[in-house]
Length: 448
Image (cartoon, rainbow, N blue to C red; front, top):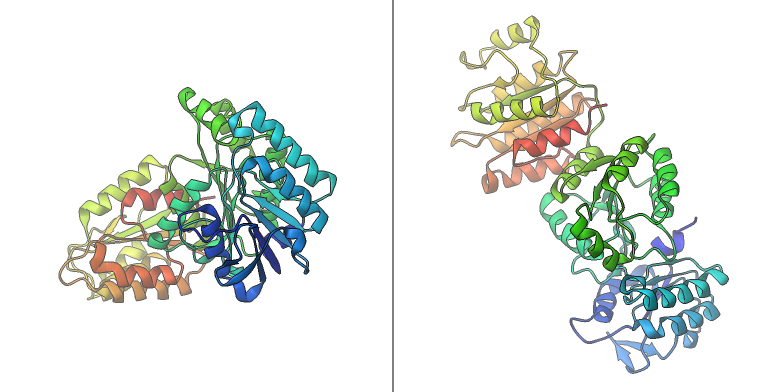
């Protein structure tokens, strides 16, 4: 399915636009205006003459120019009427933000089917109902009422929950990852998850696909689509509604059925999808997969803090990440350098001692990456008074350029004192994690 008119519309009409703060219609207006220079914007509201300095229309039929995308945010009881007007107008696609459909029971389901028939009979694709909308940062399109706009990146996030997207956008600003697209697909009466999945799989701007799923309407279609995509592009998933108690909640959320979790997990595994257990894991792994190459098992750990190195080694053992012994040549090359402290560990993890300056880090990094059975690297920095965070970051970036096929992940643990160094690392696509377990889980996802 061609979704160009959704992700790069030349004209957008918001039906239910509002100038009242703290309303969905106001949020849509505010967000869509951010990309106004790239497209024509129209506001439809029969009770307002002017919204955000723009003349309003009583109906979409009153707009003389063509409309690519209609965003519908009116009470559920009049969505069918508005949908009829949209089909008469000849729009290319619609996003139905309005709630009050299948998620509320049989009456809502009948209303949803009526709206679906109107659009399908006229061959007009639509998203929703009961959704947040879509975001395409590169195109400066924010067709949602989310409170913030994420930066552009290479993660596609497809979520059954709109509210969860709001939280993820907020967290992404702190964690420095960006999005190729964000889709809240809601009740899936129109375009379904497999169709969005197929689109993301073909999208050249997307390197990693992230899913939040509560239930599937067509498990076979999803499986077949995902299995095809995971051959060339990673998909990771967080499944909600795992307990018996929450399965009823899932049904009342989007009208989906949660289903048996063991069946879901088995299907994910067979399709090549990586299933994770928390939102933090989901985007920690997504960042690693988007920024770093895949590799064979076998990594080295370099640290200036013995305890942090021990924790990282423990997690490597837990998640079956191999720590090869250092070769005689590697140890000799390090030992023969006057830069290295005589008390370094002579083993992997490579503890270069707490007073390590950047020259010691550089020596260890450059030497260990030459070892053939070391396929990736974790660099830990516990910040001491003499630690040169920025210089260490620059040494890591230089090493990454020399060894582009070996993933490098960092654990700079100094908090605010490492802020500039971490920003520099992540600007250069080297993911940093504040806790060793987060780093090891993320690196594990890179191992083929």
